[in-house]
Length: 260
Image (tube, rainbow, N blue to C red):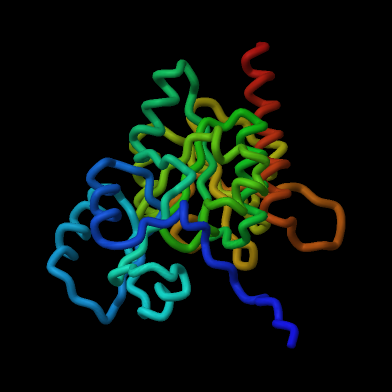
């Protein structure tokens, strides 16, 4: 009798996983880049307090999941905990800002507020890197994960573009304000036309959810709201297309200012 090929979700590659308490805690203590940690929500272990403290200080998300979820990830004895190594070496926001200035560059960031399609976030990163942005900022949750699929969609730009991960977009925008950034939200409801906008100094371009756009917090906290002028009857653009248009416009403006 012929066997039926398995067509369900594939297990992650073992090399991308940290399996068991000792490997996860050891990786955390060594400062290894970790994307997230999954813990059996029904389990109890005295090492959990140490792990939580290490993960919090490193800004690494911890998700409590059913044991069945962990069983699907690996056939090995996971002891109720599995960590995902990260292909992205995340930086704190303050280091992202300082790194640009230290490199002799004016910081220009893209802040992703709720983009959940992995192809969109990859395309946004690709445009950001192509058009001279100095960093990408993403929240811990609410966006597509920056793993192999996103890196592939970005044509490797995510490995070349510095990335910061923050606990809150609202807190991030407040911190950027303190550091002299003009926070610019793209919205089809904005009154100001992209073509009529001219900004100098550090900027942070904020892009929202594919369906609902910018969150209420971003709409409230962005110092500038811009729309892309369109003549057709379609109400809005795909978020990654809008990002490409806006960032190219921004790059052109910067180039013209430097030439003046």
